[in-house]
Amino acid sequence: MIGKKIEDALNDQMNFEMFSANIYLAMAAQFDAMNLTGLANWMKVQYQEEIFHMMKFYDFLNERGGRAVFNALDAPPTEWDSPLAAFEHALKHERIVTGRINDLVTLAADEKDHATANFLQWFVAEQVEEESNVDAVIQQLKLSSGAPGALFMLDRELGQRVFTPPAQGDAQ
Ligand code: FEO
Image 1 (cartoon, rainbow, N blue to C red):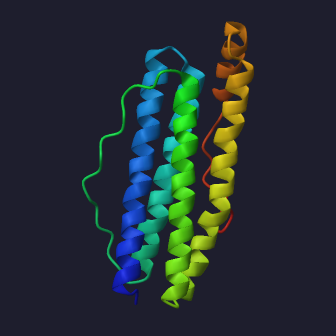
Image 2 (tube, rainbow, N blue to C red):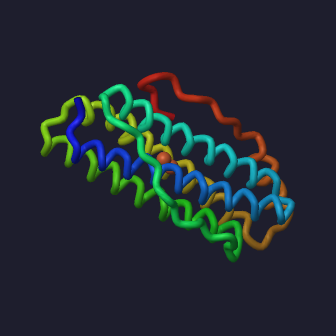
């Protein structure tokens, strides 16, 4: 049985993952409106990643005898000044997620909840990937700045990204 403090904290993160999904889908909507369908695709895959993260918290809460509770979420922004501004926002957001996961690991240790601490290790590894993936696109966008042909090529490349659900225990 899960402790109330951990149950509330995991629910809070489950809702934050849903909020993250909404931010990336809003970014996809702007890219689609700009006909940058590859960048939009990249963000739609990111949206699916976040839904996957959210469901991991949902499933874990149920497995531990807790209850997933959904809250009202802040609306995501609707406009970013440029593709680079959107991806820089995404990186800033992922760093916030990493901080939140780290705080959860600390809480699980303080509460001596080893099952939750073990569950969270998947997210610790996943956040390294999440930050690195976004940062890679930021670097590519910076290199393509002022060269519309380069942005076109990058858009085509990002259009290849597909969502593959990670194997159990395998962060990607
Ligand atoms: Fe669920 Fe991108 O962190």
